[in-house]
Structure formats: C-alpha cells, structure tokens
Image (cartoon, rainbow, N blue to C red):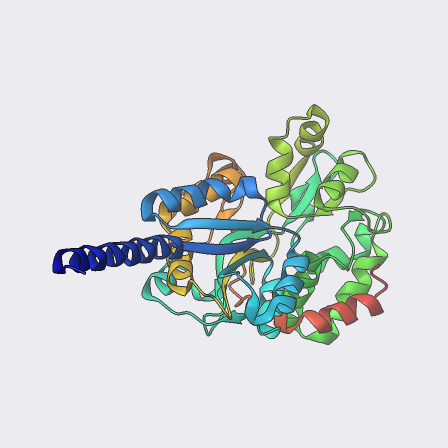
Length: 344
C-alpha cells in the first residue's frame, strides 16, 4: 500500500469517527422530562428552551401518581432526567421513594423562596396555587368569613362544598393546619367541617364551584386556577357558574391563605443531569414565570414577577409561608384525621 493510500485511508477513518462522535454529541444534547402538567400548559415553554439552548426536550405526560410509580418501577433504567408534578405532597412522596436527587445552584436558590423548595434541594416550586374560600354572591357576605378554622362553626351547617379526603389538595390543606395548630385541634376542626358539608364530597374543584352556583351550597373550597379556567372557558354555562361566586382570602390576620406548588425534581438517575438543571433554572426565570402564570392562572413562585390581569382582579393576599415540605411530612397524619372525622 502506498503512503498516499495509507494516509487517505487513515483520514477517511478519522473523518468517520469524527462524524460519529459529532452525531453522538448532538444526540446527547437532550433532556427527558416526565410531566404531570398537560402538554398544552408546558410545551410552549419547552419549545422556547430548545430555541434558546439547542437542547431537545423529550416530553412524557401522564397522571401524577402513575408517573411516580413508573419512576419507581424503572429504577436505574429510567430515561427520565426531570419530574414535574403537582402538589408538595407528591413531591415529598417522590423524595421518600428515592427517585429524586438534590441539586443546589445559585440561580435556583435566588429565584425560589425558601418556603417553596425542599430544604436540601430535592425539589423546587415552579408555580403557586392558592386554595381559598369561594362564596356565592348575594347569599354570603365576605364580612361573614374569616378563616379556614371558622368553616367548622355551626353557622355553616349544610352550606359547604369541598371535594373528597382522597384528594391530595385537601390532604395538604389539613397537613398545613397540623403544622400550625397541632393534630388535636386539626382533628376537632375536621370533625366540625364535615358536619357542615352540604353534600357528600364528589367531583373535582370545578364541581364544587358549580354546585355552589347551582344552589347546593353557599361556600366552596377550591384552587384558584380552576376558577380562572372556568371564567375563561369556551362553554357559557361554566363561565356563568364561575361568575356567581367570588374569592375570599382566609386567615389574613394570622398565618395567611393556604398555598401549594407545582414543582420539579431532578431524578435520581438522570443521565442528562446538566441539561436537566439548565431546564429547571430556565423554568424559574422571570419571563417564563410570567408566561406560565398568564396561561394557567397560577401565581409566579418567584418574587417580583408581575401577576396577570385576572389574578390582580382577585386582589393581593397574604400567603402562608410554611415550608411546603411540611405538607408531605404531615400527609399520613392528615389522612388519618380526615378518616376519623368521617370525611369521605
């Protein structure tokens, strides 16, 4: 073989190897996301992330509990790098299941207030969802309302709609009360609340608002983003139902209204760790916080980000600054209390 042919062959092999490495490098520029948020509510942000960074986001959406079970069953073989789910209680379960890992960066700790992130960095809140009281206009005066505790007063006998004890949002509400008032007082409150139910709990948060609008109850407890979605629904009946109720912010003279988060956690076996961290930091940037709040009627988790016009119409409020990891820690006790109170 001539020297020229040998060099040519070596260059050819080198170019082939180089091309292969280049392809592999490009393939590595990705991040795999499991999300309990619907695709329409997260995909535009993910597309923006890809445009800015060149990192492809492979999105899998599903039921929050199902995604957690999937992560557990996949174990070390899971392709997921990042988990987005709803409620601090579920984020706590993910950590307890061993499917998350801690990550602490300056960008994350500066953006996300301490109350809305796991103390060791196992998860970070991405958006806030408030769970206030809704009252029927003309039937209840806001002056009659004061706190969550007051809903156990006999004056509300047969007048309250709320979803079942199996709902994690209600479990977290009770868990927050345990953190503030202890288990004994929380159980007394739950027993009094159950006595005031207008009907056996059924349906989701929207159904509680609809029931109040239909005259089945005078008060409903629900998350504000459901209310926002109803006010902007395509169906006239849903819009009209929402317009019959108004928001009341409870506990403004003490701890503040109960809030929760949708949040994200880096998975325990993330193969694209750096890209996952980049995506997590991207989601708490001011512009993206503002977009998400505008589209999904949730509150920015980051301080200083403007609220949408609709959120501003509901008024400013004092929120509970309890570290939300407490909601997960108290979840089991909250469920037991709700069961003993007869909360179906």
